[in-house]
Amino acid sequence: MARRSSGSAAAMARRIYLSLYNWGAFYGWAHVLYGTASALLLGSGGHEAVYAAVERPLLFVQTAAVVEILHSILGLVRSPVSATLPQILERMYVTWGILWSFPEAQSHILVTSLILSWSITEVIRYPFFGMREAFGFPPSSLLWLRYNTSLMLYPISMLSEVGLILLAMPSMKL
Image (cartoon, rainbow, N blue to C red; front, side, top):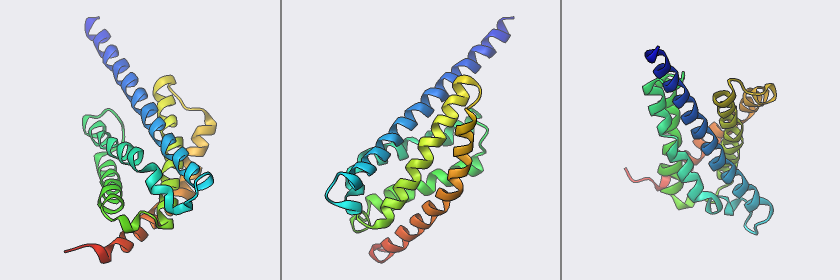
């Protein structure tokens, strides 16, 4: 009996941790999305001001996602390391290796399409997982949004990422 209760205690701790992680990541991405929308709608700089408006929260939330690799390695989530590792490393490369490292790329319109596509995707994805961990299932509307918005937003983010890498290439020193 003690073994079973320690197993369920571990499962409960896992669910609480993952729920808190997902809700924290949602908050971070919501902050990025709000900053982006504010820069576009209320700011005077338009798309050129987006990166400056969200730089710190973007760097933080994108870097915090590194723990998702550990989640996968430790078996806390079902996502295989082979899928999680490249996605996280690619986003880290674009965030730190391109956007942070090359100021000339920071005011390009592709930054806006990238950050909007990333943040909209993540403010849907993280509550999906947060609710699944907290309640055992996400609402059907969130399930629909998660898979249908990604059909539109992943190609936009991929094209934005490639475009920003190409934009920064002339400034790279080999």
